[in-house]
Length: 104
Ligand SMILES: [Zn+2]
Image (cartoon, rainbow, N blue to C red):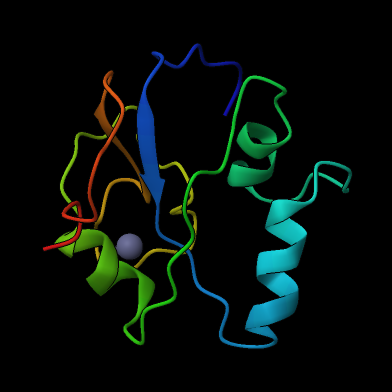
């Protein structure tokens, strides 16, 4: 995707982990890993902090559609998306988020 300079603020990423979801989440939480997915390049940046992880029992594209926010990078995390999400990373804004109301 090339380089991208993200605005400071809060982002939400919708991903899937149909097989071995616990292992997948543990992998995302590690800083040291082989960079494979778009989100790996973001999460290994020292300026990025994971503030919340939620597991929902719905497909990633459906969850992504329920999530508010704007699309800062077209195609991010959506290489295999068939639902025309545009991106599975959404920008919620520059201020700290104080609730769990980013998912409709
Ligand atoms: Zn999608």
